[in-house]
Image (cartoon, chains in turn brown, cyan, purple, yellow):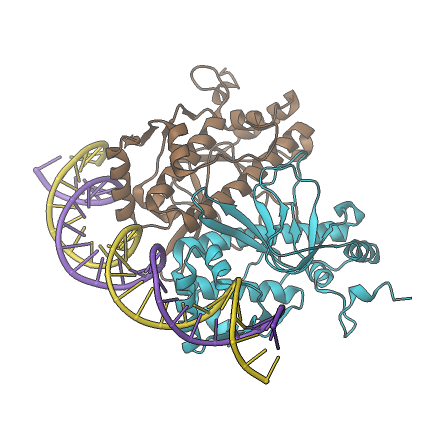
Length: 244
Length: 244
DNA sequence: CGCGGCATTGAACATCCTCAATCCTCGTGG
DNA sequence: CCACGAGGATTGAGGATGTTCAATGCCGCG
């Protein structure tokens, strides 16, 4: 018989990214960890472009991204499309303290992804705390998006978003030293940044020529994240004294 | 001796805007209503430009806007400034389910304003529900901002924001039929819309010439909100089945 | 080999910004 | 009652940043 924990570890034996992220938000007790692991075991696979939640429908429950990239999206009738935010492994959808809530945005998978129902926050105080911090980070990221779209130029927007990805993925161990997998097309980046794909392309070239990053085959490498952040005035989200 | 309830009613005897808003989010029981009224009595006055919360400091408790206009703001070192969102009478600052939370944005008064400490959500189930809905609306408005900044052009952004003000103020009775007081300068609008004051001015003129609105002496009148909304694809926030 | 999806490029154009001057409006003091 | 001053609104001209449209290149995959 197979080891029931196998799905929860990568080849080196460390826990999967999603669990790692929750644990880095707040140290989890054994009960919470077990509940999360059990939930992850029952994760559903979703394929790119499939809708996970439709805007306006009643939210059933909280979900946890186990792996893959997912986005919150809104469309205009004339086809203009805006990505409101990304959801990465270990992040939650549908956090809500209200009965009968309605989804305020559509959620679609951008890559192959695994999604499970998030264990109830009542399982433990520690888990509730991890959820709360996750939620606070979520809000901080929305504010960062507003700043980005409102006051940064195209070049800065791209760098700023990549820096945010780097920081978010670092929580789950999916980014180290400015290196991470980025399974997005330039068009998707454009939809998130309020730009056209053509212009994203040109700005990326500028960044490459400046030696600030490389991005080939879905792998991004930021040359020097700290200096880059300094250059464009980017500040990582801080929502709790406990977190770095 | 003066009637202790005087501050809670406008000349026609209806409750003040802030209380009215909470009641339109969720019908309040007598206890909650009394607690809110008591809190409002103790409201502090703040003057324009004064900081209510500074980004990065520890949040002390939840606050309720009693009257006036307040904004969440973020600045870049080179002086660029973005208004992340507005806070209107009856809306809450610092909703947070986490110990030791840090403020993720600075909050400043845009006009003379009155602010009080919000009564605890534990006072009643009804009050907690009103807070939860208020919070959900808050998030919906952040998403609306992202859409606005990312995918609307200057003209649409202005109309869209004015429509949002109209809807939000209608909850507290401060807007009726597309008419409301707007104590903002064009520069402040620009800071919220990711534009310059000059361009806001030009687009406002276009809107006036199109007969879509008037705005003089701090009073806005939207000619036909429903048709305007239709024209730019604006949709009001819906976060609960219960609400309109 | 030949698609199909994405990335890249160019040229013409639109939108929005910058800078700076001018005009209002309204409250203040003479 | 009027001049004055300050902040905000308005205007113009020229320029920067992004967009559009359309063509071309690249690369993995059946």
